[in-house]
Image (cartoon, rainbow, N blue to C red; front, side, top):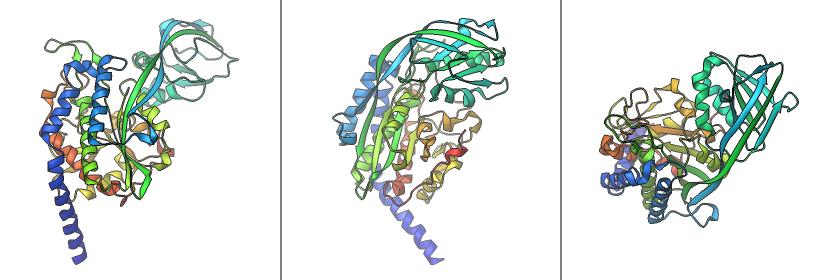
Length: 428
């Protein structure tokens, strides 16, 4: 019994000591400065392929340089740039079981200007039924490494139209996936699809704190810095989507955590701080970033997404997506013993949040990669709206959330704790 009390006392002492240093390093004034800059009107909503997102990237690079982060793997810059193909489908025609298919009911994910698809093309045929969960069934197929012809039941017409948004950009690939909205039989088919392409550059911003005794083990702190740009105005707001909570709040946290751990100098593992691009357009930044890493060397990923409002449990709380898939959350909670902050399992499991943010790419490779959020996804009033401005955020609570993440991650950063891996075979 005395041993238990001693451990609790020691835990509380460490917590208190770290908290004292943290109050000087993670401050509400700094949180507001970074948040206000990233969500300002002159960032133009940080939409990909715009001057606004380039301006945001330059600001993030400046902050990483100020903290004193190193470049990753000998890179000369914090920029991690890559090329995407931005397609325009200029023509589509075809038949399914002898029935002509309207061009608007044919959507292709391809890097080929001319794409003929027929029974001799060797495409695997998949059917998506009327009652299937469209998101979990269809969206993974858009990134498949094989040629697919996917027939979608007409009952899914509304969701089918949403596929056009995910066709906004594509990595160059030898594989193509063709989606067709139809209830016709697949005994015979023939399609011809034409595209024109424009090459566009996207950029993640990455900085690291090299580890000491375990420099080949990585802990990632991430958020996405892109948003929606301009959208449809409503009666009270303009058409600019500032994205203060989504996800300037996450990037603010990443930069503040970098400052904290740089000052603490207690990271035995290498810490990677990354501002990811194109989350809103299909997770392309996270996809590219994950390709640059050996997933076996990634110990954990803290993906920070919309932490600027209080959670459904009020202040001093947040939730972790995929909580049950690893012991990541339990480790974080243990490190917070003695504090007033509490992490909870994701209460919005029906929305598949574990698969909808930038953690998903590495999680699918077995990495204990989780998103931490406070957003009330069932009733969040400003989500993907022009009203997502800094005035809607609780900056005091947001600062406390960032501090609690810093404390809760200490044992993983120091190498004391290693979260269990995601069982890949359990992922859908």
